[in-house]
Amino acid sequence: DLVETSRTRPLNRVEQLAYKALKGPLPVSLSEALAVYFENHPKGRDKTYIKKVTSYWNKLVHFVGDVAVETLTREQAKAFVSHRLNQGVRRSTVVKEINIVRAIVTKAIRELELSAKNPFEAITVPSMPGSGSEQREPFSLDEHRLLIEKALDASDDIRLIALICAMTGCRIGE
Image (tube, rainbow, N blue to C red):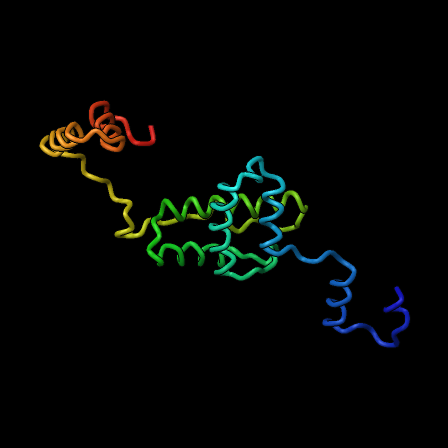
């Protein structure tokens, strides 16, 4: 190489790293990883999906910075989980966020053939006391009757849905 042959002394460590950076590919930033994810995902053009995923991803980028994917560590992943839980975010929401983050990092590593491990792989999201993950008590018989009575009195869509749920035992999602 021209740089190496025209020199009279060997390159120091900083010069070696600079030379390597000039010759090799640049590291892939987290913002670039998100673009790769959308380019290679079936819902990558769905505006609603993009908005949801981007909001989850931006929380990570805000926490660690727009660093290179290959520099993410397991400690950062654990710290991010703790940070979100300490913000009062429900465990189930943190699990959703981590699942999206894991998928984005995995997709970037696979598609860009990066030599990195996904630090979010098999990460544990612990339950936090008072995080809302306690079991809810079912309605009492009197509460159930009152719900049906009030739903019958009003005939708007919301109360009809509540009436259907109360009479069939199904959930809103069903």
